[in-house]
Amino acid sequence: MIRELYKSSFDKLAVHGMSELHAVDILAAIPDRQAVKSTGKTTRHFKRPVMILVAVLCILLIGTTVFAAVNGFFTRGLSSMLKADADLQQMLLDAGLVTIFDESDAITADGVTIQPTVMITDGGRLYLAFKVKDYDTGEYIRPEFSNHVEVDIYDGVDLKTDCCTGGAMGFYTETIPGAGVGADDNITSGFGIPWGEYYDSEHNLEYIINVGAERSAFGQTVHVEFSGISSYNSGWNEGNNITETPTGLYWAANTADGPWVFDLKIPEPSGMTGELLRDIHQVSEEPIWKGVYIDFIEITPLRINVHARATEEAETIQYYHIDGWYEYDRTGVEVTKIRLKSGEVIDYTHDRIIDPREINAIYIRETVQTFREEVIGGESYYTEEQLIELN
Amino acid sequence: MRQQLEMLIEKYQKSLFSVAYSILRNIEDANDVVQDTFIKYMTAQIDYSNEDHLKAWLIKVAVNRSRDILKSFWHRNKVSLYEIGDIPWKKEETHLFDAVMKLPEKYRIVLHFFYYEDMQAKEIAQILNISESNVKTRLSRGRRLLKDSLNGGKEQ
View 1 (cartoon, each protein chain N blue to C red):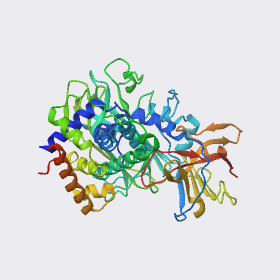
View 2: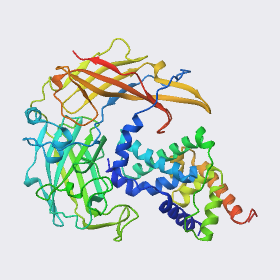
View 3: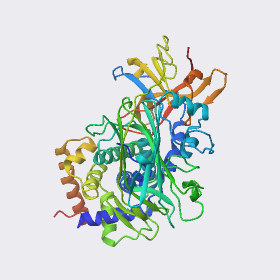
View 4: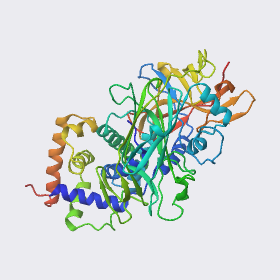
């Protein structure tokens, strides 16, 4: 009896007080959280062992971009997201980093056909685009795989979760590329996303997956499962048509169950030259920041990884605040800008394909955050930005 | 295993909001915790082995974040309002909710997982990083306190 009453009281509380939240809200909030405060905290004691900090630049699928048509193999969504002109696309092709699929790879279930179109990977990051044909959202707007989307990279023999670091996936719209987005049943959604943006001129949808691989993805198999494509109206607690799925109640319609299961082989690159995969060792003999050294920088057309090492004394910082001791920790080095050989400095906050050979310097900084296991938020601050010249 | 953010929000927002509220007793702060938790999901470099792992991780993050807020100077110095005046609760739901919210936090959170998430003591122990026997003790004391409160302070 108490259990039922308790659940019903909290369910009503949630209906009353829970904010409507969408993926775009979260994605939009990430830069704000990283725009953190400066601080002059004092160092007190250090207790964590020396460890290697490996910072992988996670290319976030955020921001508004303008669709740029290019004459290459990139799909509508990839073109918009990765901002690669025909020359850069050719560079990826020549390096063997691209797999182009055709209709023979498509799977049709419940009248809906899903076809992988393009896969791009440098071994550490993977973009995978799918075309979704013969699915109409009808009077609803937001297409979504309600039951299941799973991505794993494995050895092709025994499927175990052997995947992935950060990333995002979702149906492409020109406004919010690559992110699952909310919409309502008006012509324009609450986020200013015209519902027609989901479809291309042939009334196909595009679904894009972007993940990082824990280990080299070359020669591995990427396993993708889709099921339960549906169309949604605006919010979790609005609408009239309630569909019960294994994961709860949804206001959805036009559901096609599928599943659509793909095991796609990631080839070994044939032309990944040393120039395109730049391994730059022993970057700094002097500390970049107090007690922090850069050992190794890896640059590919898809990402920049900075491997930093902190001495024990620089590992943890503690300071006293009004209500007690707080402990701060480093969270990893972030690349903020790159400088090209032409002298042009490019903001490195959006997805883009870049020719590693054209980069001659990067700007980095580090976020230092409240330290406690799995605690988020709190105060954090950036270290001073540093320019790293690459020879 | 990584899942689409929009889907995660649909599946787990209510659970995260509820657990955050059970700790913070404040709607605004609970919503902040939910958002922070999903931000953490997007920025964390974690491979989740299965759905249970993912759910437990999200809840653990929400609990830790809630406790962070609870300890903060700002939270301790602002008036805690339940903001529940408009909720169409039945009389017995109101009594139960009030009684639970008056319990100390260490009992509230354990009771919440037990009643709302149907968790076993072992699962609760893992999320709160305390021993299973400790969970059972808190559960027992919390339920006793709750019953006492619902019965007007009288021992049963």
